[in-house]
Amino acid sequence: MHFSILDLAPVPEGSKTAQALANSLELARNAEAWTYHRFWLAEHHNMPGIASAATSVLIGYIAGGTRSIRVGAGGIMLPNHAPLAIAEQFGTLATLYPGRIDLGLGRAPGGDQAVAHALRRSMDSGDGFPADTVELINYLGPSDRQGGVRAHPGEGTRVPVWILGSSLYGAQMAAHFGLPYAFASHFAPATLERALAVYREGFRPSEFLQRPYVMLAANAFVADTDSEGAYLATTMQLAFARLRQGRPGRLPRPVADIDSEIGPQMRVAVDEALKISVIGSRETAKARFVSLLERYRPDELILTGQIHDHSARLKSFRMASEVLTEILQVRADLRRAPLTDTLV
Image (cartoon, rainbow, N blue to C red; front, side, top):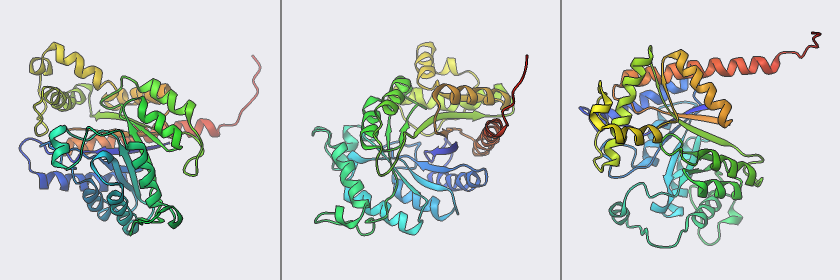
C-alpha cells in the first residue's frame, strides 16, 4: 500500500506567498526521501491562505525540483476549465516529467459564484462534468480518439485520471468509468463509508483499471507528545471554523484553548468535519492509522497537514512516514510468514 501527501501550499500568518511555495518544494523533496508515493496539490481560489490556485504551474515547479515522486492535482476543478486547456497543460507536464504526473478531477468550482464569474465560467448550466471528463481523457489518449481537435502536447500521454469526491456522485462516476477514486474524507467524511461501498460494488473494469482503487484522505498532526499534536491541530481547527464563518485568511497560529476561540457549537461541527484525523504522539498515531486502515481498507492513504510552523510540519510528515512504514512492514512480514499446523 502506498501513502502520499496532499499539499495546499499553505500561507501562514506572518509569512508570504513566495515562502509558502518554497516550503512546498522543500516538503516535496523531503517526502521523496521519506518514501511518499505522490505529492498532490489542490486548486482553490480567492483563499489568502492557499497558494496552489495555479495548480498546473505549481505542479511543474514541484516536479522540476524533485526526481522521482509522482506529482499531480488533487485536484483540478474541471468546471473552471476547458478540457482541451487541461489536456494541453497536463500533456506538457507529462512530456517534461514522463511517468510522474497524475490528474485528479473535481466537480466543485473551488470557489463561489463570484469566483466562477471571474473565471469566466457559468455555474448555472447543466452538469457537464462526466462529458467534460470523457472529452479530456480522449484528448490524452491515442490520435484516433481526438476528433477534429487534438491536444498538442497531450495526445498519447495517457496521464492517469482520478475522480475526486466527497459525495456519492463522484463514487458512482468513478465506478462507471473504471477510474481510481479519491475521497475527501479529511474535511467531508459524512458519506465516506457509503461512497466507498458504492464505488467498490459498482466498479466496472476498464482499460485504465481492472479493480477498484481507493485513496483515503486524512489529516495528520504527529508530534513527540499527544498534547503537542493536539496543539498543532488547533491551526486547522481554527482555519476551518473561520472558513465556515465566511472569514478565510492566512493559516492561523496554533492556540492554547481552541474552545475559547471558536465556541462549543462550532467545535462540535469542526470535530465532525475533521474526524478523519491522526493527532498525537508516534504511539497514538500508530493506533489511529491501524484503525483507519482496518476500517476503510484503502489502497492508498493521502495525508494533509495544515500546520503553521514549517519545521513542525516537516517533522509531522516525517514521523507519519516512519509510523506507516513500520505498520506496512509488519503487515508484509505477516503475509510472508509460513503457515504451520498446530495442535492444541
